[in-house]
Each structure stands twice: as C-alpha cells, then as structure tokens.
Length: 261
Image 1 (cartoon, one colour):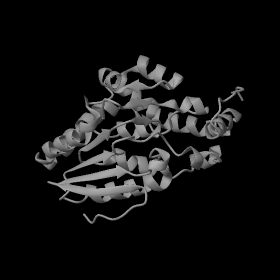
Image 2: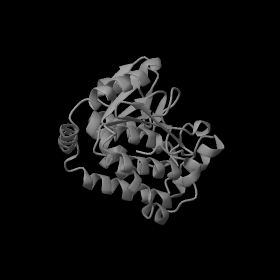
Image 3: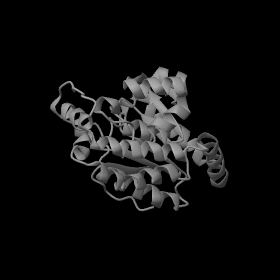
C-alpha cells in the first residue's frame, strides 16, 4: 500500500509484510482526537485489502501509548452531539480489521487508549505500562467498548472495580488479570512486537483471518447489546452538570465537586 504522511500518525513498514502505525501527538500524550481516529481507520481500511500487508503493529512510541480521548475536543459536546458522533464508525474500523493487529504499549494506556489496545489481538506491554478506564473521574463512563471488553478480558469483579474507581492496573497486574498478552522490559516492547509480527506474517493469511474471527466470536458473542447500552449511557451523561464539572476540573487541573445532577 502507499504510505502517506499524517499529522497525528507515523506510518512505516519494517518489511516482511508488516505495517507499523505510531500514534504521534506527543504534546497531548497521544490523545485520541477525531482526526487521528479517522486517519487510523483510513489506513486500516486500505491495509485490510492490500495482500502485501500481513500484520499491523500499533504503538504510541517509547513513552506513552495513549492517555485517553481528547478531553478538550469533547468538552462542549451535548448528548445529542455524542449520539450523532461519527467516531463509532472509526472504532468499528479497528474492530473489524481482519488481519493480526498487535498493540505495543509503553507508559499510559488509559480510557480511549485502553479501549483501542483492547481492540487489538495481542497486547505487548512494557513493564512501565499502566492500564485503566478513568472516565468516572470526569463524570463519565467508557464510551468505546471499555465496560464490555474490559469485563470480557478480566472478569466482572476486577472490571467493576476498575470502572467504578478509575484506578489503574500495572503491567504485571494487567497480565495476571488477562488484559495483556505478555510483559517485557520497556526498552524491548517494540522489538518484541516486531518479532511477533514477523511470526504472524509468515503464517497463512487465510488461516490467520479465520482463526482471528473464531476467537473474536468466542470473546464477543452476545456483546452487541452491551455495547449499545454503553454508548447510549455515555451520551446521556453529556446532559449532566456532573459531566461538565468533571471535564472543567480536569482542564483546570483541580479536584471536581460532583453534585449528582
């Protein structure tokens, strides 16, 4: 496929049928604004139909994967705005990508970043990585599959605690809970992801696609109703005063005072 230049992403090919996509918004800890997700979806749509691409690595670089969605971008949105948001189409493009997708995670992997990583097939985590869904601190809930996929990955008890408290999981705790595939020294994450990608790129593309589809079906069977409920609840919260207070407190770097309305 033709490798283009993007404002928020760096795309390159290490060879052997591997495509590498690096989130590149260092000034905002790779916050997932709409433009980034749109370009990511575009790349994956193209890669999915390119027979030369056998495997994709998604990384945020050596310091951070993604610290969440872009809070500034969503600060003034209403519930109606969120219900009409185009972003679910871009999230679906990641979910529907039929080839192996490896997340190479260093540093923070939070909120939308964690939801993005959970859409990948294999997560290689550096020992400095931290995972979580801290949306509750903004008066929100995860809105891109976090309540459903985190529960599927680590079970109801751990997921409930993580979603309700916003507390983070260390890389080792995330591995023990079943959220990540393996943990490696932070300096070796990119190399290990590349090693795995080469392994997968050498396999039968048809077998890989069908194997991925089968495993995903086992993990996600019956999930759609929960995803729909999550998205509607996420949008509803944009009509609350608590959501406005949570976002404003985050942007003003102070402790929020929630009133329950």
